[in-house]
Length: 547
Image (cartoon, rainbow, N blue to C red; front, top):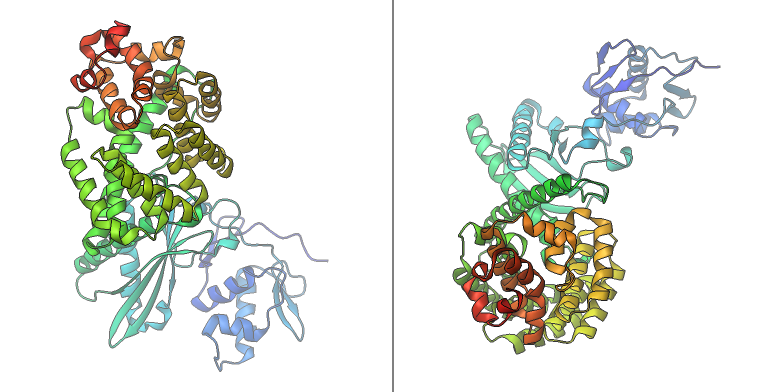
């Protein structure tokens, strides 16, 4: 009967073993490859030919005896005994089998956001192998520079495949395949979703063989292109069934913050809101860089034009009140840019429902006489869309703006039933429901929808209560949040609320209902003088009602 297996730790790339006393023993290239194929197929008999192919490549004419010698060397280094094996057992007449258990993956690899690796083909490069390894190292450095510090990037030349990981694994990998062609080393860099293996971006580059500075510059450019194309793949994946704005935001590499729970203190929840706002801005700026790179490469790409117009629009949706508070108001130019981009793209994207429905939303947002065209475009796109939840949410919002509230809520409720609770799409769609209910002053259903939202994110109370509380029965939270506002921020919030929501409703009563809660709070706190001029023009009678 064999001894109980000792506790050893194999390096993720099988380059060494750490014995119980902490001693590290290195493996040669052949030993490493033989060990890798055995360990990655635990309790499975591998023939000598299978191990030989893993070590030297398919079709090698090296003899079986070489594998026996190789296994014996591995046993010596692992302090294993052929008669009473703990790791490698012999199956006479068949081959060898690893009995030391399934491999464990280095925790650092599992915790990484992006892995640069595995590196393939470098053993075919002979004396030019160092060039490939240097370029891989420079790519690793470039990804670290491009991504936020909290997104860990690791170089893993022999990274294990996804099945070797448990629940936790990297989000992305950049697989590097090297080969020699006409005296030059080439590299094909392939970005994949780690768990599924889905290809997101591919670039081929000639590896510089002169000074390291050239290699660093080349790696930096490849990295920027790979990240931009990866972002686009993630931001346009119809299979995720998300509205385009949510996809684009989700494709950012910035981490999402915890939503907070009702038992958290107000101070903690407010801190979460502030951190969330700062990360939203950082994510928007990152997406700006990615889109600029993509548009520079493909200036006539119609879908990119819609994406960039959506990106401009999202600036106001996500943090427009901060811009207004800081005196930044680029609306005339931004609206001109959105209009030009959408109209240029429109002839080419009408057969692409996910872009067409977003183009309709943007045309309506402009309030420049496109309502009928936008309505027709949105309904046609909705009728042919395969992104059910995403199209239901947007067409529902469109119908709410048109005053068809019950039809809008039917679409929005169906979308809510199709998306995972607590997901970004759930937040997005539930917010559209709140907006539709507020416009018709249906505070009973609005209250229930808010309860659903706050169960998922207590921190959202600090953002939503001043917007969605009953204007005649203002909640204590809404009043308390208003007391923390400066007059400048209160005015900025009013301007933002009017611009991104209230003005978009066709029915004047709905426009007034949409702004009433926030207007009530601001006027009671600061007086009519705090109301921006553009709101006084739009709603001349409202401020007097709350003075």
